[in-house]
Image (cartoon, rainbow, N blue to C red; front, side):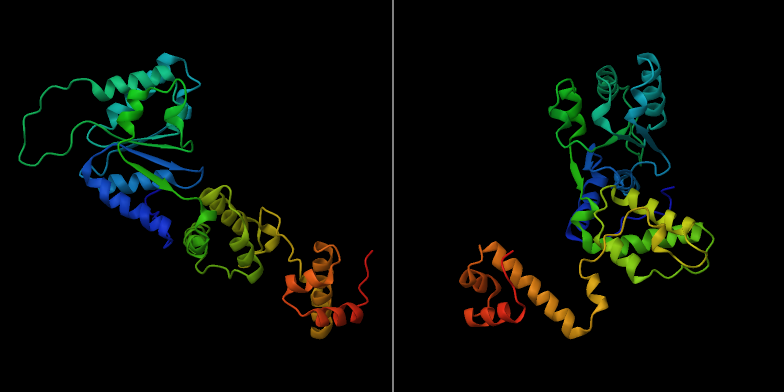
Length: 301
């Protein structure tokens, strides 16, 4: 799934992520990645791994939610097996904040247990396991019950991935990138054109589910639209109607008058129907606002 994905964006927040990846990758420090759900924290972890000195083929990912349901012995076995598989590579632990206390203790022991000395080789890859953890909880290590010693081991270097809504200038790039991949997967030789209505909706939407929600939205557009044509009706969220849309029914001068009347009425309401203050609010002269009030027959209701 992650073989082809790249970290996309030119926003300063994402450039900082790339810069911190380059800085920490060869240092072999354990890393904690903070970010909301759906911000592709695993993609960041994989980039760190690929730029490190560790075996590029050994990357193990474990969602700590999987360690909650099994009995303690089963959870320990899952952790032990994944940890063993990650030797000389990287172990990515997603949702580290939900790891049960007993498993935290076990992981701490595994990371700090004394190893037999290794005979030096001319060129030797890093030994043991590098931990890259991720969480949506920026204060997880302060919570009662989380192993403070384990938190210190993990939090050697921090990277924060900003949510999509905080880097809106990247939305066109992100949408085009994931749209291209999805269209190819759906068998399109050429991507269907994206209408202005859909594109504006993509730009203004809040994306609380971040990149995961964007990918789901793109798949819904491709799955539920007529062939070779994207339909706004296929968007999984409601498109907010432009509040100025009603003006389309009027000619230019009538539409302009309606907007002007609305703004003057609102300014008067906010100023307690004081014409001087309303004029100041609209940056108009008092004489001008009186003429407009008379012209539009604006009265206090």
